[in-house]
Length: 621
Ligand SMILES: [Zn+2]
Ligand SMILES: [Zn+2]
Image (cartoon, rainbow, N blue to C red; front, side, top):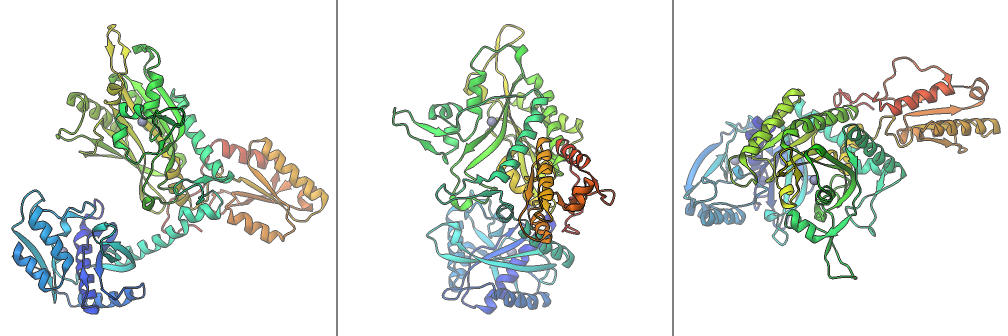
């Protein structure tokens, strides 16, 4: 884990202690693997006929505390591999035995989702293993590579959260095990802060809020991973999409439009055909030609560029399009809007000369800054560069120059950035936008990539000042990335309390009674708001006004006005303002025109008057 590196030995030691406790309580327990994961640890266990339930977690915790209180040192020992295999056999640990046999045979246990430190390997996997290490605390010995804390007493604060099913080595058809998962932190305060954050995250789960706020739905008939956006959700999509397009238009990007399928030859030429085995094929009854749903848009866009001769004077050429790409993601990996099979992108491609990369990236990173400020998201830029290996295509000198340019841009704009070598795509370096939400969780959103390869594969050209043909460079860029993923993050970031410019319903007008003059007045107010481009609705149900107010609050409508006789007579309203929206003065009755103009201005200027910072200390209600 890159974060909390110092907590790693502690969390890892807790995995031993938990296995030890489970063995005390269920002596027949057979153990799989027990790695450190984000915020904590787990261990896979097989209790034979018994099985663990959520209720057992308290018992295990109690047993763990007695092991912790005993302050048992972790002691290292080594065994030759054959002795280790015999040990596993004697102790009836068939899973460990299997791992050890793999180690002996292949020098690795190859389970790429496991931390390779968790198993007792002495080699790095490409040679044979002679010996393995074990660690013992009290009466418990485990095959392990370490490192651990000095003794069981030095393990901070932890809590076991859940038990779930897991196949041995993650492979269907293998024995079913149970995965016991816990979180651990250096102090009780850190732990309780984390648990509080998890509670808040549960409340903010975008799948739950999507349902409650009527933003999107899934249908079994349409299929998994294919979200359907309701009218309210469509407002969100269109508003963020328009915002992105406005920023790009100001930077010289032009809109293009492409179909959602293409001949597979297009993707064979681009090289994506082999890279996207998770493709949706499309068959034609008319011809033998094979088509597929587009998994990306760049190949199409190259064909617009290639449709006429280009001169150095035409560059950069910048195409943008909000459009959907289709990828047949595994059903088990689909997750609300965060992982879907049809993802909308604010995708753009720049075709430019090498000497224009700096200006283009400066413009892109400036757009990102402007956009994420409005969304109230803090972010870091991860610059992914190449290493010395030969897995990258293109001239290393050009790479070097381009990487330097990207870093120059990051420095010049004073971005919060870091460099990771060896993380570049094979076709060029990239910048990922890592945003932090109101709960302190980090998400990768947009990615901006340089591409030296696709222009080559499609034979893109421009005529230079020298009259010769040259290759342009391509930049893939998105500000939002996937709309769906962005909305998943943003819904949880805001807890569904969208700023006025994004709120699907900006003003709700409720009537105090059903008198004609009151209803007429309320209706006119809604019409006037609509004329100003605002999204306003009328609640004229014969319910108590208290109920109407609660209904508007549940839908997190930013502004609500109640119309009764008093409002009709004075022509003034006293808006009820959603609690998280900061207002400097106590609201007073204001004239209708003034109220509507203020809201319209707020919406148009994309003002963010909500206060999201300071969370999670107070979890604004
Ligand atoms: Zn260990
Ligand atoms: Zn692209």
